[in-house]
Structures are given as structure tokens and as C-alpha cells.
Image (cartoon, rainbow, N blue to C red; front, side, top):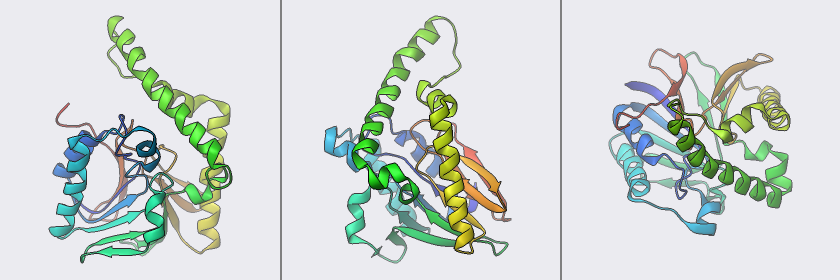
Length: 247
């Protein structure tokens, strides 16, 4: 498929659970004039602990560079996990690769969007990094628990995938409250700055919705859900849930 723009976040290259192969499949089957990488593409936190870098992770980097060489404008917006890049920004690589902390985007209808990973609006990440890192360990533990749970479900004849980490995120009251607050804070910021919408990542929950007349778009992630936000050539906004052709 061909799109005007594709927005991706939270691939977390360098971790065991990064679905780099699925992302590569998505990139092979979809083209765009613009590609926005909305943070946490490379997981510097995980690399500090114990790197899990496979050939497919290197292939992702090569694929992104190849996209730029073939005419796609690639914008890399940093997140908290790839904050090690921030001291070098803004940075332009060649003619079509732009690294920055935030960006603006105007869609086909003329609406203006603010693009940010979202960690600057997360009080825990910004003021209590030790707690954010601890939460990252907890999320990693839940991801590890998904594997034995899935094996038991298959043994019981239940083939549909179920994620403990996603269940906790979507159903535990404190987690739901955090997501709601996060979405509202970003929408309020966009309104204050006279934007029509905001595009982000960070919380691994793909979403397109209106919050008090501000369009909120979250790219989701490539750890569990394999999602992207796209603007079509006709100017329509969509969430793509990718099922790899290689599965």
C-alpha cells in the first residue's frame, strides 16, 4: 500500500520482545512519502542492561536508511528509551533523515499536528526516572510471563493469543487512569499551542479519537500489538494492525 505518511513508535530494538521481523514485513509491503519514527525505536535502557540485538534489528536500520535513499522523508523523534540521542539533536543525515525531539505535521486538509513521543508529558518519566526504570523491569517481567501462559493455553487447545501485559495495561485501574490522564494532558497541550491534534507513542496503546475537539493519535507499538497510524493519499487517518505475511 502507498500512504501519504506513516507514523510508527516503540519498536524497542535491542530487546528480546521487539517484533523487528514483523516491522520489516510491514515496511516491505507499505510505502509512504513521509515516515515518522515517534520514539523508542532503539531501546538504550535495555542495551545498558543486556543487549538482545539480532540480525533482524540491524536489518530494520538498513531498511530505514534504504527508504530514505529511495525518496522517503524519514523523521526520527526521540523518546525516553532512545534519549541518548538527544544531546546530538537536531541532526540532519543526508537529504532525507531528520533527528529531532519533536515535529509539526500538516495533513491534507490543512489541520496542524504536534508530534512528540510523549515522555515529556509523563511526570514519572521526567521526575522519577528510577520509578520509570523499575516499571520498565516490571513490564519486561510481564512480557516474559506471556510465553509460559501461551504454552499452557495451547496445551488446553486455546489458540487465540492472550497477553498478560496487555490485560494489566487495559484493565488495572491505576494503569487505565494513567493512560486517561496521559491522553488528556497531551490533548490540553495541543489546544494551548493552537494545534488541531497530537501524534504520540510511549504508552503502547494505539488510538485515534477526539478529546475535547483535539484529535489524539497514538501509534501503539511493535512489542505486542504491531500497529501504525497512517494518513492515506486521500487524507484519511487510520490505524493499521499488521499481521506479518511471514507468520
